[in-house]
Image (cartoon, rainbow, N blue to C red; front, top):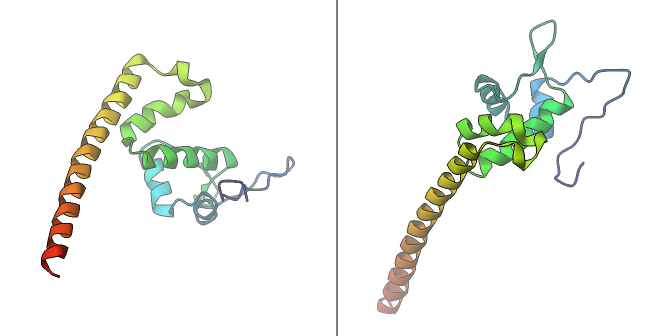
Length: 135
């Protein structure tokens, strides 16, 4: 296991690992359905066995982990797709337009958080008041 809790696939230099979707799902923590979705969206391109089954190499599984992290941060698939080719090149490789879109997304998220925090505070106040009245 790695420090992130995801088991790396052992790779022998003389033998290519054969990892089907079930094993890729298990080691990445991403459902098989999500792996197929990532493929449909053009985020990953797994190899294929002679029988047509998907073959996930370690670099594809590593990419899946990055995709999952970006999606869990709330970025839409469109922005993840745009970011992926530049991740290995460092932060300077992304376009200013991409950074503007990410900042805009972050700002919309912050606004939603603010509204939700206000709603939570209103509910907390209601519960305190209702709790006093019920005594």
